[in-house]
Amino acid sequence: MSLVIASQMEEGFNSELRAHPIAPTVIGVPEERPWEAAEDADVLLVRPSAVWGRIKQSARPAVWPGRLRWVYTASAGVDFYPRWLLDAPLVTCGRGVASEEIADYVIAAIYLQSKDLEAVRARSPTQWNQTPLGRVAGSTLGIIGLGAIGTAVARRALALGMRVMAARRRHLPSLVEGVELFEDLSAVIASADHLLLALPATDATRSLIDAGLLAHAKPTAHLINVARGSVLDQGALVSALDAGRLGFATLDVTEPEPLPADHPLWRHDRVRLTPHVSSNYTAVRRVLFDKIAANLGRFLRGEAPTDIVDAAAGY
Ligand SMILES: NC(=O)c1ccc[n+]([C@@H]2O[C@H](COP(=O)([O-])OP(=O)(O)OC[C@H]3O[C@@H](n4cnc5c(N)ncnc54)[C@H](OP(=O)(O)O)[C@@H]3O)[C@@H](O)[C@H]2O)c1
Image (cartoon, rainbow, N blue to C red):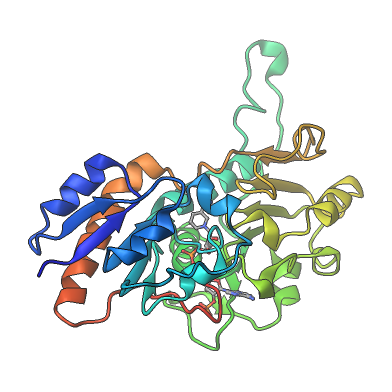
C-alpha cells in the first residue's frame, strides 16, 4: 500500500510529489481544518498558513494524531503551529532550506552598515569629500544560535576576514573551524560589531535578548534579527537605540508581523525593517522539494530522516 501524504502545499508541489519514485498518494487538506487529514494520511506536510495562527492556542483535537506517522513542516521554525502539532510519532522541519539565502541577506546587511556606498555617492565636485567607510575585514560578528543559518553566516564571515564568536544551546562544537564558541551570551554580545540573532522561538528564548543583555553591546553595534521577533525585547531595543547604547538594527522579523502602524520601529532612523523576506521562499522552493523527496526515500527505507524536531526543546 502506498504512503498517503496529506499536503498543505500548492498543487504544483503536490503533483511533483506524486511523481516521486515511491509513488505516494498525495491528497489535499481541508483549508480551514488541516489537522483533520490525520484521519486519512500517514504523513502531513504543513506550511505556516494563517489557519495555524488562528488556532495556535487551541486544545489538541480528538482526531490528533490519528493514523499519522510523520508530520513535516515546510518551515524551519515550528513556532507557527499549535504545540499539539509536535505530538506525533515523528516531526521534521525545513531546517536549512533557506539558510544560504538568509546568510546572503545577513552579509548584505553587514555591508550596508559598513560600506554604505550610496551615502558617499558623489554627484558633483562639491561632493568630492573624504568620508571614512567602516570595515568588514577585522570586525567581529557575534552569532546567537549556531544552527543551519548561523553556520551558513559564519562560513561567509570567516571568508571575509571577520572574527566570529558564537553561542548555542547545547555543549557541542562548531561545525565550522575558526568559530569561537562561548557559553556566556554577554561575552559574545560585548565583542560584536555585528550581532546576529539566529535562534529559534521557544519558551526558553522568549525575550531572551533583553535590556540586561543589550546593555553589554558596543554603542556602535549593529544587531541583525533573522530569527523571530519574540527572541528580542523590542521595547528594550528601541530604548537602547534611542539612548545611543546600540548603533543600528536590521530586522527581518518582528512581533507581531506586521507591527502596528504607530510602532516606533517603522520610522526609527537607526532601524532597517524588511518584511520577513530574507528566506527568499520562491528561490528556495526547489531546495525544499529536494529535501522532502530525499527524506521520503529515507523514511521508506527505514532510515531516520534529517532535521527531526525535538518537541521538548521546541525546535
Ligand atoms: N527570517 C526567516 O524567514 C527565517 C527562515 C528560517 C528560519 N528562521 C528562524 O530562524 C531560526 C533558526 O533557524 P535555523 O535553521 O538556523 O535553526 P537550527 O538549525 O535549529 O538552529 C538553531 C540554533 O539556535 C540554538 N539555540 C536554541 N536555543 C538557544 C538558546 N536558548 N540560546 C542560544 N542558542 C540557542 C541552537 O543550539 P544547538 O545547536 O545547541 O541546538 C542552534 O544552534 C528558526 O527556528 C526560525 O525561527 C527565520
